[in-house]
Image (cartoon, rainbow, N blue to C red; front, side):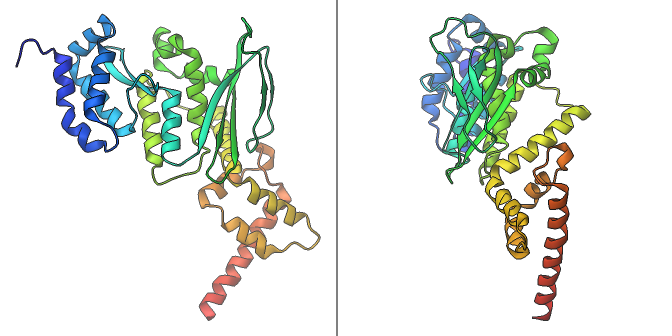
Length: 323
């Protein structure tokens, strides 16, 4: 080997074969140049890359799997030194890019809300109102974050997260809890936006390429220092509510139709059954949250749906057998 070739450079070369196999949309030639530029920006990054060249190879393979470019002009992803390794750091812009590329949403944006801002939330299926003075020297402390996305069907999906929730997520970062270091210290605003996008992505429509964004989130979680994802009972309850709200965001028109039909003096239970059966089983289970826990259907509506939809299902099954 040429003595002038450093270990990190050899690692980039060794990553080429698998990189080209994994990624059809990225140019290895271009990305290798971006990688070298990022690793040579400071002596520390280059030192880590030379001491742990295998991490450089893994980071480039992760890059290929996400389909994101290292082009700094886009700001989607970066190679950064962390805990003795070079890792792929995916920005909140990168997560949005994957979501739009895979067709989950047509666009999405995340923003932070500060003390001096005026923020009005109108539910998960409507855009909020956010008024702020972008030229103010001090808008106060961050009090929350939100993400708005538009689906291919034209629906708006909104996810919100208050500061207490952001702190909970930060508190699960092992890098933050162990040493009070890492991205949650260095890039708090960007991490808060990334946290709300990670959550919001769970409410976005599923596509056949859904695994790309899930994999990107897994890579991001690992590169951020790892997270202790063990949930308390309170957190499990909260997640159950979030799952319900996500399903409601996807099927709010259907839920509204069913509720309006059930309010009639003589409801058409066949149309109720047809509308309910349009909802995938996983989302039906998510929507089947007790009203005492924040579910969208009242106790009477739940009982009526359960009884009448089951009865119609049995009638249809008997008709199929007799036919």
